[in-house]
Amino acid sequence: MSYLAVIRHGHFSKLWVAQILSLIAQNLLNFALIIIIYNLAQGTRFANVSVSLLVLSFGIPAIFFSAVAGIYVDHWDRKKVLVISNLLRGVLVLGYLVTDNHLLAILALTFTISSITQFFAPAEAAAIPLLVSKPALLGANALFVLTFYACFILGYSASAPVINLFGTSGPFYVAAGMFFGAALLTLWLPGLTAIGKDAMRWRQIFATTGRELQANWLAIRRNPNLYFPIVQLSLVQALVGILLALAPALSLALLKVELQNASHVLVIPTGIGMVLGVVVVGRLARRLSKITLISAGLLVVGAALSLLGLSGQLYRQVAGEVIASTSTVALVAGTLMLILGLMNALISVAAQTLLQESTADAMRGRVFGALYMMINLAATAPVFLAAIVADLLSVTQVVTAVGGVVFMFAVAQTLFLRRRSAAQLEKLGLKSAS
Image (tube, rainbow, N blue to C red):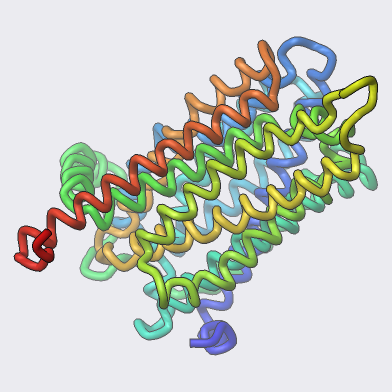
């Protein structure tokens, strides 16, 4: 199905445009805050730690709230969740204007906004199958993933120009306006209560939350088509979190410029790679299984991360002469970031499609809530640890080491999957005799 045919679903197009507005607002806000915090802490020994605390304030709410939020979303009208969460985020974003660049106030406000997002995200994912016909579902999911990465480019690329044009308060006004626009669009959607479920009050849901959480985790653990993509998506997001936390220092180490002046090397190529990955994944999926795509993608990600860290060695002097110029290192780094973005998209699309295909509507909110919890849980410790080590050693050494760990994990996972596949064939009597 073509994207144009999917967009012609009237209610879906409203949700899709609302997604575009909210994602651009979220990415614009996140990257602007990273720049602001790093500039505030620059010159101290805790610059990378300060940025990592900000990144953690994005992610920690998911650890505490997303799994529970998914259960509430399955019992509520998802339209109301979408409208209210966008309105609240729009109002709270304006709160940054009165924080006076106080780190603790910024972290607290970011934590609150991210907590509200934990209700928005599973409600949005669960609403898609209710707004399009079953034959259009694959195209709708592909379009959402495509626009997710396109909004990554727009939001992150626009943050520095917005700051340069309107000052540090500019991103907050722009993001708030986009959240309010998204709220208006979702207000025009029909009711989106989960199929086969009636809306429930807070107390009713609270009384059954523990039991439903336990049943949800048991269902995920017993189904490889659920836990495998969740693990892969969690790992990819952990890597994204690490790169975000280390991006300001990495820009200085590799390109000798501040991050807001290096988006054309580190940010834009990554986003372009992500969009290209979404475009080609359909063709690759016709030739390779989703599991094969994921495993191969992780191998490439590990190698590319290690090479990105090692590219800083191009500045090493030999006989008093620098081996490579800044432009050469920028070309290498930009190419590697494009590859990382491409592989990120292949892994994410393949894993999310596998998860979407394996989840019933009645439990879709809680499964995606569990996914967002695992994604952020996996990213929390590595992000903080990577920032501490980068402050003690060097950011390029940390990126190289992370790449090595990912590559070894990908190799081990590939070998495990091959052995499991061989064992299944042997059990079915299909393995050829040696």
